[in-house]
Image (cartoon, rainbow, N blue to C red):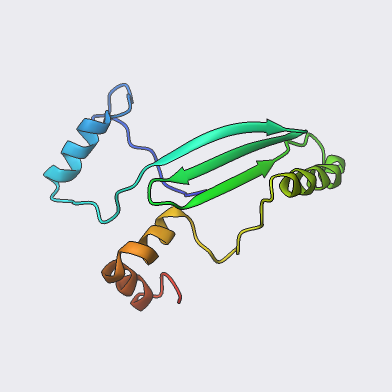
Length: 126
């Protein structure tokens, strides 16, 4: 998960979500500018007993998530076996757990100044 919170209308009203245009207007009014700008396209597939989500970022980073929903702990071993089977069928390889997400990957590739600040602050490591 990415842990962020949602942003509503901010006026204590009906809690309607902001439009993308209104959110951008408010951020720019606060003199904020993006240091990262990319989009992600998610495609959903099904194979065997697995749900497969493929996320492809506009800068070339891609991730595939393979999952099986379990209703009880005794289903976990069979679910893990099915995930392994489907992963081998589509030649999916496990990610290095230290690889970070899309934003970290973007920063490491395209934002050397931001990366230096995050390394210095101890937020990221080499």
